[in-house]
Length: 389
Ligand SMILES: *Cc1c(COP(=O)(O)O)cnc(C)c1O
Image 1 (cartoon, helix red, strand yellow):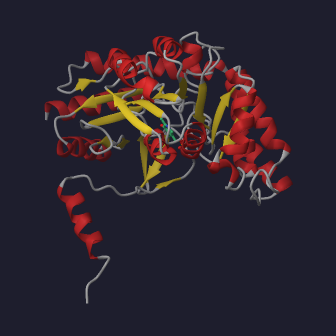
Image 2 (image 1 turned 135 degrees about the vertical axis):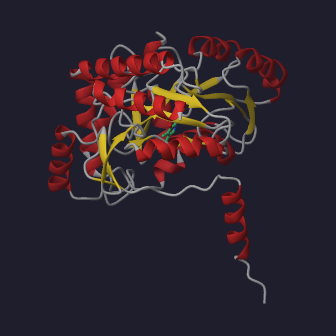
């Protein structure tokens, strides 16, 4: 008798041996800058909740009220029985923030990328993407059946060479990139990318997951940060990071969004966003618009921590960043894991990010608007202690 599942345990031991094994950590209590980890109060530098909205009363009250009024589930796909006025209000609010004609919300950011890419390109087409792109952009490319070519991280000269050589062989071409790179914190050179797209007749899909609510004068994202508002492109984002809820979206021209409602499989064949998630995201967008001081505090904290990490002469290099994501590079996965474990014993949660997620190991810190100056100092002091130990 052979066991067709035996390979799974062998595969798991390979993952363990490479120090690539991962497991979940249980967080309890309300989301925030300080959380309970294994029953212990811990400083949270691992959250995508940049504005501290996931535990905010306005969002909680909105989610509870929507649940009481509409129920827990939306009970069907949007095109059948799952469409509510609240969904439309959220889509209009996203389009207003992004200054696009329209927007469409998906059940997650991951599904937004999969669905949009699969709808926009097919086997006759080409996708050229940054090598460091998020998994959802890469898997979307596979799902679409288009040819995928990666270019070296943020290297537009290399991208241009690829387009020179390949563009004419294909029908449509989609350039896909993160705007804020999620595991590094640096930004894609958007204006130049849009110029290239124009020159080579390419569409652009920009993943604003870590930029929405964070970058730009009104929190509209990298497009606003780079003064590219109104230029033709397709913007994707998530409701689950700075907006503190769950779900994803695509924002763009009215025909694009209408087309996606008819062709994006991960929107058509899945249940609509729950009333609670929809109402929470809508409440978050109101705060993004009406309380810019939250964004100011986030950036103030990011600037302070960056400066302190630089000034502390730590033995680990600070990776280039133009966002609230700050990373210290480590030589090996083992060292990154050891530093993360040391931080945790000091009551600080910050993840070791390792291959295969990224090419080189690092510790990643996400700054929040709700971190206090004391929180930042605690982190810096802990790092200084471990550096000299
Ligand atoms: C988190 C993330 C996504 C996925 O968004 P979810 O709403 O969490 O599914 C997509 N792209 C990037 C760059 C991300 O960081």
